[in-house]
Length: 242
Figure 1 (spheres, rainbow, N blue to C red):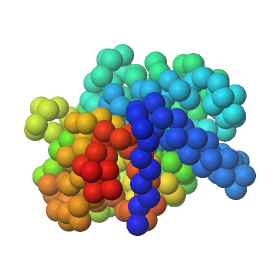
Figure 2: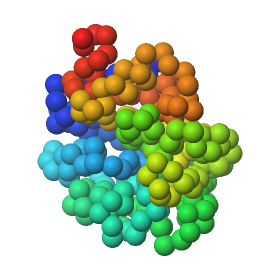
Figure 3: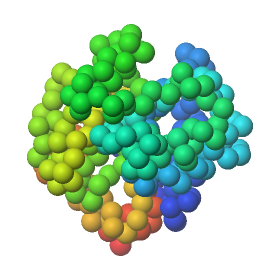
């Protein structure tokens, strides 16, 4: 079963998640000397990233031992404000002493299929494994039930062999490059960050026992290694919070 943590407001939720990331980072460093993290995009994690670029977090982490990837990316130029890696650079990565060679963005100069294939190969080369296991994969949740770029009723939901895949998302009329469910589910820790009243309905659906992974792709994510960090607004329709 997944673990769920609810905090009074968005900042407290991000603070708790930052502390959890540090805990996992310390365990990974103790075990193998490095920590691999796949970041999420969108607007929700910006506060988390900005928080981790400040004390005490910036001084707690040995950034040269942390390696950054992205769980999904929009097929946009790296300089576009809506590019996920661009947001993470602005909010976190350019503010902390992480070596450039530790950062692995999706190269969107390529066509989507080529970009996805190259990113998959890059990940496999880094881990030297057919099915890598990230220490941490950060995820968000769309109000339609998508996570990463696993959108409802898209072909990527049925992918069993590829680790990274391109997907055209009709509802936003754009290409995305995304981790697939098999790669996400092989992570040591999958951490969801969900905040805001607008997410309360989908959170209630996800936690209600719903099983339709086509309509609600977040249900594809293995609950046994998953933790949910919610603010009170996002959790407001859950039974314990009514």
